[in-house]
Picture 1 (cartoon, one colour):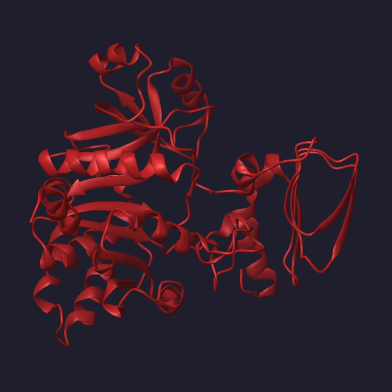
Picture 2 (tube, rainbow, N blue to C red):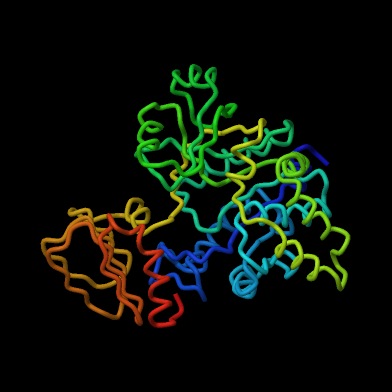
Length: 373
Protein backbone atom coordinates (compact mmCIF):
# COMPACT_ATOMS: atom_id res chain seq x y z
CA UNK A 1 0.00 0.00 0.00
CA UNK A 2 1.49 3.38 -1.01
CA UNK A 3 1.69 6.51 1.12
CA UNK A 4 -1.35 8.15 -0.52
CA UNK A 5 -3.50 5.10 0.21
CA UNK A 6 -2.30 5.09 3.81
CA UNK A 7 -3.17 8.78 4.15
CA UNK A 8 -6.66 8.20 2.72
CA UNK A 9 -7.27 5.21 4.99
CA UNK A 10 -6.16 7.21 8.04
CA UNK A 11 -8.13 10.38 7.20
CA UNK A 12 -11.43 10.89 9.03
CA UNK A 13 -13.94 13.69 8.59
CA UNK A 14 -16.20 14.87 11.40
CA UNK A 15 -19.15 17.03 10.35
CA UNK A 16 -20.74 18.98 13.20
CA UNK A 17 -24.45 19.32 12.39
CA UNK A 18 -26.23 19.90 15.67
CA UNK A 19 -26.93 23.65 15.63
CA UNK A 20 -30.38 25.22 15.44
CA UNK A 21 -29.46 28.06 13.04
CA UNK A 22 -31.73 30.58 14.76
CA UNK A 23 -30.21 33.57 12.93
CA UNK A 24 -31.71 32.19 9.69
CA UNK A 25 -35.27 32.35 10.99
CA UNK A 26 -37.89 32.06 9.55
CA UNK A 27 -36.52 29.49 7.07
CA UNK A 28 -34.42 27.72 9.70
CA UNK A 29 -36.58 26.20 12.43
CA UNK A 30 -35.89 24.04 15.47
CA UNK A 31 -37.35 21.03 13.64
CA UNK A 32 -35.33 21.67 10.46
CA UNK A 33 -32.27 23.89 11.03
CA UNK A 34 -30.39 25.61 8.24
CA UNK A 35 -27.81 22.83 7.71
CA UNK A 36 -30.62 20.62 6.41
CA UNK A 37 -32.01 23.28 4.06
CA UNK A 38 -31.14 24.42 0.55
CA UNK A 39 -30.28 27.93 1.75
CA UNK A 40 -28.20 28.67 -1.37
CA UNK A 41 -30.80 27.57 -3.92
CA UNK A 42 -28.54 24.85 -5.40
CA UNK A 43 -30.92 21.90 -5.01
CA UNK A 44 -28.79 20.45 -2.18
CA UNK A 45 -28.80 21.07 1.56
CA UNK A 46 -25.75 22.63 3.22
CA UNK A 47 -25.06 19.28 4.93
CA UNK A 48 -25.13 17.45 1.60
CA UNK A 49 -22.79 19.98 0.02
CA UNK A 50 -20.37 19.67 2.95
CA UNK A 51 -20.32 15.88 2.69
CA UNK A 52 -19.66 15.95 -1.06
CA UNK A 53 -16.93 18.59 -0.60
CA UNK A 54 -14.88 16.19 1.53
CA UNK A 55 -15.43 13.03 -0.53
CA UNK A 56 -12.17 13.52 -2.50
CA UNK A 57 -10.31 13.57 0.84
CA UNK A 58 -11.98 10.89 2.93
CA UNK A 59 -13.50 7.44 2.41
CA UNK A 60 -17.24 7.24 2.99
CA UNK A 61 -16.74 4.79 5.86
CA UNK A 62 -14.46 7.33 7.60
CA UNK A 63 -17.12 10.04 7.94
CA UNK A 64 -18.86 10.81 11.20
CA UNK A 65 -21.71 13.28 11.59
CA UNK A 66 -22.39 14.58 15.09
CA UNK A 67 -25.85 15.98 15.60
CA UNK A 68 -28.59 16.39 18.15
CA UNK A 69 -30.61 13.26 18.77
CA UNK A 70 -33.71 14.78 17.14
CA UNK A 71 -31.86 15.22 13.82
CA UNK A 72 -30.30 11.78 13.40
CA UNK A 73 -32.96 10.57 10.98
CA UNK A 74 -32.69 13.71 8.85
CA UNK A 75 -28.93 13.16 8.55
CA UNK A 76 -29.43 9.58 7.36
CA UNK A 77 -32.08 10.71 4.87
CA UNK A 78 -29.77 13.33 3.38
CA UNK A 79 -26.62 11.18 3.53
CA UNK A 80 -27.88 7.68 2.68
CA UNK A 81 -24.29 6.54 2.03
CA UNK A 82 -23.66 6.53 5.79
CA UNK A 83 -24.47 3.74 8.21
CA UNK A 84 -26.40 4.59 11.35
CA UNK A 85 -23.28 3.98 13.45
CA UNK A 86 -21.62 6.90 11.65
CA UNK A 87 -24.22 9.34 12.97
CA UNK A 88 -23.39 10.19 16.58
CA UNK A 89 -26.33 11.62 18.50
CA UNK A 90 -25.80 14.14 21.28
CA UNK A 91 -28.46 14.01 24.03
CA UNK A 92 -27.77 17.68 24.91
CA UNK A 93 -26.07 20.59 23.16
CA UNK A 94 -22.84 21.29 25.05
CA UNK A 95 -20.92 23.23 22.38
CA UNK A 96 -18.01 22.02 20.25
CA UNK A 97 -15.42 20.77 22.76
CA UNK A 98 -17.66 17.94 24.08
CA UNK A 99 -18.80 17.27 20.50
CA UNK A 100 -15.18 16.72 19.43
CA UNK A 101 -14.28 14.70 22.54
CA UNK A 102 -17.31 12.51 21.76
CA UNK A 103 -16.20 11.74 18.21
CA UNK A 104 -12.60 11.18 19.30
CA UNK A 105 -13.80 8.14 21.25
CA UNK A 106 -15.20 6.44 18.14
CA UNK A 107 -12.35 7.40 15.84
CA UNK A 108 -9.71 6.28 18.35
CA UNK A 109 -11.56 3.01 18.85
CA UNK A 110 -11.45 2.41 15.09
CA UNK A 111 -7.98 3.77 14.20
CA UNK A 112 -5.42 5.09 16.68
CA UNK A 113 -3.35 6.49 13.80
CA UNK A 114 -6.23 8.61 12.49
CA UNK A 115 -5.84 12.14 11.18
CA UNK A 116 -9.02 14.11 11.63
CA UNK A 117 -10.74 16.96 9.81
CA UNK A 118 -13.45 18.71 11.84
CA UNK A 119 -15.87 20.94 9.97
CA UNK A 120 -19.20 22.67 10.53
CA UNK A 121 -22.04 21.48 8.28
CA UNK A 122 -23.13 24.92 7.09
CA UNK A 123 -20.24 26.76 5.44
CA UNK A 124 -19.94 28.04 1.89
CA UNK A 125 -16.81 27.30 -0.16
CA UNK A 126 -16.74 28.83 -3.64
CA UNK A 127 -13.45 27.36 -4.94
CA UNK A 128 -13.66 23.69 -4.09
CA UNK A 129 -10.61 22.70 -6.17
CA UNK A 130 -8.43 25.07 -4.14
CA UNK A 131 -10.17 23.87 -0.97
CA UNK A 132 -9.26 20.22 -1.59
CA UNK A 133 -5.67 21.23 -2.34
CA UNK A 134 -5.46 23.23 0.91
CA UNK A 135 -6.96 20.52 3.09
CA UNK A 136 -4.65 17.90 1.55
CA UNK A 137 -1.69 20.07 2.56
CA UNK A 138 -3.09 20.41 6.07
CA UNK A 139 -3.66 16.69 6.50
CA UNK A 140 -0.08 15.98 5.45
CA UNK A 141 1.15 18.51 8.02
CA UNK A 142 -0.79 17.11 11.00
CA UNK A 143 0.13 13.58 9.97
CA UNK A 144 3.79 14.46 10.46
CA UNK A 145 3.63 16.99 13.32
CA UNK A 146 2.16 17.21 16.81
CA UNK A 147 -0.04 20.14 15.83
CA UNK A 148 -3.53 21.53 16.16
CA UNK A 149 -4.20 23.20 12.81
CA UNK A 150 -6.93 25.62 11.81
CA UNK A 151 -7.61 27.18 8.42
CA UNK A 152 -7.20 30.96 8.54
CA UNK A 153 -9.06 33.45 6.33
CA UNK A 154 -7.74 36.92 5.49
CA UNK A 155 -10.26 39.39 7.01
CA UNK A 156 -11.97 41.92 4.76
CA UNK A 157 -13.67 43.84 7.60
CA UNK A 158 -13.77 44.06 11.41
CA UNK A 159 -16.05 41.22 12.56
CA UNK A 160 -17.07 40.36 16.12
CA UNK A 161 -18.61 36.98 15.27
CA UNK A 162 -15.35 35.18 14.42
CA UNK A 163 -12.26 34.07 16.27
CA UNK A 164 -9.00 35.84 15.37
CA UNK A 165 -5.60 34.23 14.92
CA UNK A 166 -2.39 36.24 15.30
CA UNK A 167 0.67 34.90 13.53
CA UNK A 168 3.95 34.60 15.40
CA UNK A 169 6.41 37.49 14.80
CA UNK A 170 8.65 35.56 12.41
CA UNK A 171 5.58 34.44 10.49
CA UNK A 172 4.41 38.06 10.14
CA UNK A 173 7.79 39.04 8.68
CA UNK A 174 7.70 36.14 6.26
CA UNK A 175 4.20 37.13 5.17
CA UNK A 176 5.44 40.40 3.73
CA UNK A 177 6.39 38.52 0.57
CA UNK A 178 2.60 38.23 -0.06
CA UNK A 179 2.88 34.51 -0.85
CA UNK A 180 0.57 33.77 2.04
CA UNK A 181 -1.91 31.37 0.43
CA UNK A 182 -1.69 27.73 1.56
CA UNK A 183 1.20 28.32 3.97
CA UNK A 184 1.33 27.04 7.55
CA UNK A 185 2.49 29.29 10.39
CA UNK A 186 2.81 29.06 14.16
CA UNK A 187 0.10 30.89 16.06
CA UNK A 188 1.03 33.55 18.61
CA UNK A 189 -2.45 34.21 20.00
CA UNK A 190 -5.93 32.84 19.39
CA UNK A 191 -8.73 35.22 20.43
CA UNK A 192 -12.36 34.16 20.20
CA UNK A 193 -15.04 36.73 19.23
CA UNK A 194 -13.52 40.08 20.31
CA UNK A 195 -15.40 43.34 20.89
CA UNK A 196 -15.84 45.61 17.89
CA UNK A 197 -13.08 47.97 19.07
CA UNK A 198 -10.59 45.10 19.37
CA UNK A 199 -11.77 43.63 16.06
CA UNK A 200 -10.95 46.96 14.40
CA UNK A 201 -7.44 46.89 15.88
CA UNK A 202 -6.94 43.30 14.70
CA UNK A 203 -8.18 44.13 11.20
CA UNK A 204 -6.04 47.25 10.82
CA UNK A 205 -2.89 45.53 12.09
CA UNK A 206 -2.84 43.13 9.13
CA UNK A 207 -1.31 40.23 11.07
CA UNK A 208 -4.55 38.54 12.16
CA UNK A 209 -6.67 35.96 10.35
CA UNK A 210 -10.22 34.79 10.93
CA UNK A 211 -10.61 31.31 12.32
CA UNK A 212 -12.65 29.40 9.74
CA UNK A 213 -13.83 26.81 12.27
CA UNK A 214 -12.32 24.03 10.15
CA UNK A 215 -9.68 22.11 12.12
CA UNK A 216 -7.20 19.32 11.46
CA UNK A 217 -5.13 17.20 13.84
CA UNK A 218 -4.12 13.64 14.56
CA UNK A 219 -6.32 11.88 17.07
CA UNK A 220 -3.20 11.50 19.26
CA UNK A 221 -2.55 15.26 19.28
CA UNK A 222 -6.10 16.28 20.08
CA UNK A 223 -6.41 13.58 22.76
CA UNK A 224 -3.21 14.88 24.36
CA UNK A 225 -4.56 18.44 24.31
CA UNK A 226 -7.83 17.38 25.96
CA UNK A 227 -6.02 15.34 28.60
CA UNK A 228 -3.76 18.28 29.51
CA UNK A 229 -6.16 21.20 29.20
CA UNK A 230 -9.69 19.79 29.65
CA UNK A 231 -9.05 16.58 31.61
CA UNK A 232 -12.55 16.40 33.08
CA UNK A 233 -14.10 16.31 29.61
CA UNK A 234 -11.42 13.94 28.33
CA UNK A 235 -11.99 11.30 31.00
CA UNK A 236 -15.79 11.62 30.97
CA UNK A 237 -15.85 10.70 27.31
CA UNK A 238 -13.00 8.20 27.52
CA UNK A 239 -15.27 6.11 29.71
CA UNK A 240 -17.57 5.55 26.72
CA UNK A 241 -14.90 3.64 24.80
CA UNK A 242 -15.23 0.34 26.65
CA UNK A 243 -19.04 0.53 26.29
CA UNK A 244 -19.14 0.85 22.48
CA UNK A 245 -21.36 -1.85 21.01
CA UNK A 246 -22.80 -2.86 24.39
CA UNK A 247 -26.14 -2.19 26.07
CA UNK A 248 -24.36 0.33 28.30
CA UNK A 249 -23.23 2.60 25.47
CA UNK A 250 -26.18 5.01 25.49
CA UNK A 251 -26.14 5.31 29.28
CA UNK A 252 -22.42 6.12 29.15
CA UNK A 253 -23.05 8.82 26.51
CA UNK A 254 -25.87 10.31 28.57
CA UNK A 255 -23.67 10.36 31.70
CA UNK A 256 -20.81 12.11 29.87
CA UNK A 257 -23.10 14.78 28.43
CA UNK A 258 -24.95 15.29 31.70
CA UNK A 259 -21.74 15.88 33.66
CA UNK A 260 -19.53 17.76 31.16
CA UNK A 261 -19.24 21.53 30.92
CA UNK A 262 -20.49 23.36 27.84
CA UNK A 263 -17.47 24.98 26.18
CA UNK A 264 -16.27 25.60 22.64
CA UNK A 265 -13.11 24.02 21.25
CA UNK A 266 -11.93 27.59 20.58
CA UNK A 267 -12.11 28.73 24.21
CA UNK A 268 -11.36 25.33 25.71
CA UNK A 269 -8.36 24.18 23.66
CA UNK A 270 -7.23 26.51 20.87
CA UNK A 271 -6.76 29.61 23.05
CA UNK A 272 -4.73 27.63 25.59
CA UNK A 273 -2.68 25.04 23.68
CA UNK A 274 0.96 25.74 22.76
CA UNK A 275 1.03 23.72 19.53
CA UNK A 276 -1.56 25.65 17.49
CA UNK A 277 -0.85 26.43 13.83
CA UNK A 278 -2.77 28.25 11.13
CA UNK A 279 -2.87 27.43 7.44
CA UNK A 280 -3.57 30.64 5.55
CA UNK A 281 -6.02 29.94 2.73
CA UNK A 282 -8.01 31.69 0.03
CA UNK A 283 -10.76 29.46 -1.35
CA UNK A 284 -13.80 31.71 -1.04
CA UNK A 285 -15.21 31.08 2.43
CA UNK A 286 -18.26 32.18 4.37
CA UNK A 287 -19.63 30.65 7.55
CA UNK A 288 -23.18 31.56 6.41
CA UNK A 289 -23.94 32.57 9.97
CA UNK A 290 -26.41 35.33 9.10
CA UNK A 291 -28.61 36.62 6.33
CA UNK A 292 -26.01 39.38 5.77
CA UNK A 293 -23.27 36.81 5.18
CA UNK A 294 -25.51 35.10 2.62
CA UNK A 295 -26.17 38.47 0.96
CA UNK A 296 -22.44 39.15 0.79
CA UNK A 297 -21.63 35.97 -1.14
CA UNK A 298 -24.73 35.84 -3.39
CA UNK A 299 -25.13 37.22 -6.94
CA UNK A 300 -26.66 40.71 -6.89
CA UNK A 301 -28.49 43.02 -9.25
CA UNK A 302 -27.38 46.55 -10.18
CA UNK A 303 -28.77 47.86 -6.87
CA UNK A 304 -26.91 45.26 -4.78
CA UNK A 305 -30.08 43.25 -4.08
CA UNK A 306 -29.59 39.48 -3.71
CA UNK A 307 -32.74 37.60 -4.75
CA UNK A 308 -32.39 34.04 -3.48
CA UNK A 309 -35.92 32.93 -4.34
CA UNK A 310 -39.19 34.38 -5.57
CA UNK A 311 -40.77 36.50 -8.27
CA UNK A 312 -40.01 40.09 -7.37
CA UNK A 313 -40.59 43.60 -8.62
CA UNK A 314 -38.30 46.09 -6.88
CA UNK A 315 -38.67 49.87 -6.91
CA UNK A 316 -36.23 52.23 -5.22
CA UNK A 317 -34.87 49.22 -3.28
CA UNK A 318 -31.20 48.45 -2.68
CA UNK A 319 -28.78 46.34 -0.64
CA UNK A 320 -31.52 43.88 0.32
CA UNK A 321 -31.60 40.09 0.53
CA UNK A 322 -34.91 38.60 -0.58
CA UNK A 323 -36.10 35.02 -0.18
CA UNK A 324 -39.83 34.60 -0.78
CA UNK A 325 -42.13 31.78 -1.76
CA UNK A 326 -41.61 31.10 -5.50
CA UNK A 327 -45.39 30.83 -5.92
CA UNK A 328 -45.88 34.43 -4.76
CA UNK A 329 -45.12 37.75 -6.39
CA UNK A 330 -43.39 40.20 -4.06
CA UNK A 331 -43.54 43.93 -4.84
CA UNK A 332 -41.12 45.92 -2.71
CA UNK A 333 -40.55 49.67 -2.74
CA UNK A 334 -38.39 52.05 -0.74
CA UNK A 335 -36.28 49.64 1.30
CA UNK A 336 -32.52 49.84 1.75
CA UNK A 337 -30.38 47.28 3.57
CA UNK A 338 -33.21 44.97 4.61
CA UNK A 339 -33.83 41.23 4.99
CA UNK A 340 -37.13 40.11 3.45
CA UNK A 341 -37.96 36.44 4.00
CA UNK A 342 -41.30 34.67 3.53
CA UNK A 343 -41.59 31.06 4.68
CA UNK A 344 -45.33 30.39 4.15
CA UNK A 345 -46.24 30.68 7.84
CA UNK A 346 -43.95 33.56 8.78
CA UNK A 347 -42.74 36.81 7.27
CA UNK A 348 -39.57 38.66 8.28
CA UNK A 349 -38.89 42.25 7.20
CA UNK A 350 -35.87 43.35 9.18
CA UNK A 351 -32.96 45.81 8.86
CA UNK A 352 -29.68 44.01 8.19
CA UNK A 353 -27.93 46.32 10.63
CA UNK A 354 -30.06 44.86 13.45
CA UNK A 355 -29.92 41.19 12.46
CA UNK A 356 -27.96 40.14 15.55
CA UNK A 357 -31.31 40.62 17.34
CA UNK A 358 -33.00 37.85 15.31
CA UNK A 359 -31.74 35.15 17.67
CA UNK A 360 -33.42 36.90 20.63
CA UNK A 361 -36.56 37.53 18.59
CA UNK A 362 -36.98 33.80 17.92
CA UNK A 363 -36.98 33.28 21.69
CA UNK A 364 -39.66 35.96 22.05
CA UNK A 365 -41.77 34.31 19.34
CA UNK A 366 -41.55 30.97 21.09
CA UNK A 367 -42.63 32.57 24.36
CA UNK A 368 -45.47 34.50 22.74
CA UNK A 369 -46.83 31.97 20.27
CA UNK A 370 -45.25 28.63 21.22
CA UNK A 371 -44.37 27.99 17.59
CA UNK A 372 -41.55 25.94 16.12
CA UNK A 373 -38.75 28.46 15.86
